[in-house]
Length: 135
Image 1 (cartoon, rainbow, N blue to C red):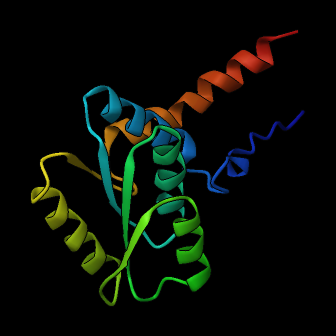
Image 2 (image 1 turned 90 degrees about the horizontal axis):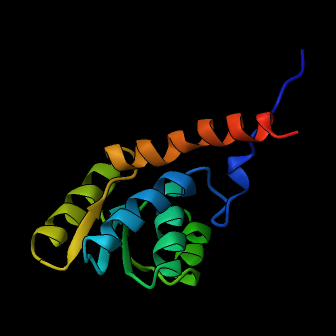
């Protein structure tokens, strides 16, 4: 039987998370959100920075101290405001949530826990079905 691959890791950010993040960020933009604040150690931050920048939104990513300098430089090159905070992701995430609470124009972007992300990621299934049905 044939095996088909969908290479979602070849998205603009270099992360498989762009598809879900694009749906989430576009939904937030339609709601009037202008600033996105996320916590990440890598892939999710790259995805929100890429997509947010494409939508013209301000993006801040809080990363833990364990984040590699290469990732921080990439986030900054994508236009994200990067804050290094805490020994681990939990500490970085706590600060991200606190910043969102203090900013009425911002929305928290979870790296993994939002139904809008899941809806965006799941669109890959529909896309595969459509592509396989095309002659």
